[in-house]
Image (cartoon, rainbow, N blue to C red; front, side, top):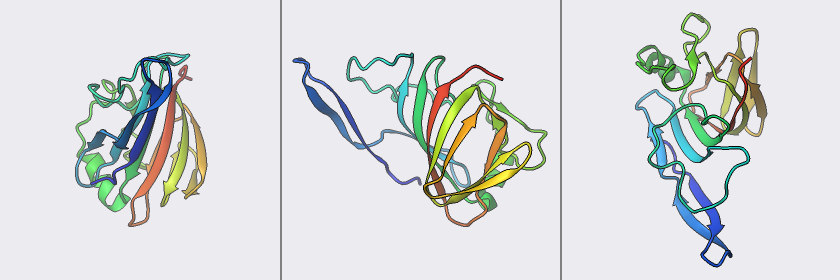
Length: 176
């Protein structure tokens, strides 16, 4: 079970004054079961520039998808279990990646989690450590490290026995 993430959202009241709209656990949590990643969707925008009108929660009532909407963005936290559990879950996955808006690289023998999206992603390691894998090379990222992922084919490999939590901001981008 992923850890609960407190989400505080601001907005405006009927008089146009700044108010807190919500304060509590983020409601859109997707736990795919033992060995799989857990995703907490924190916010989504559907256009650029983003609209700050209204107080509706854009994470609710939407199917969970990896990339943001066209011209939009997503803010999420992903909890990666150890590869000792996750690799088996990835091999058994029946996700139709194309319908979810990304392409899995099933021919990549280095890791079954290789995939590519048409996004620019800002990734901040919140806890733990994880390897970022590219077609060529890998880098160990530790708590506090930041990765700028620019539409590349990549995978995440947690070689420890502790979960790794990463905050992501995904922004729609032109494919390479």
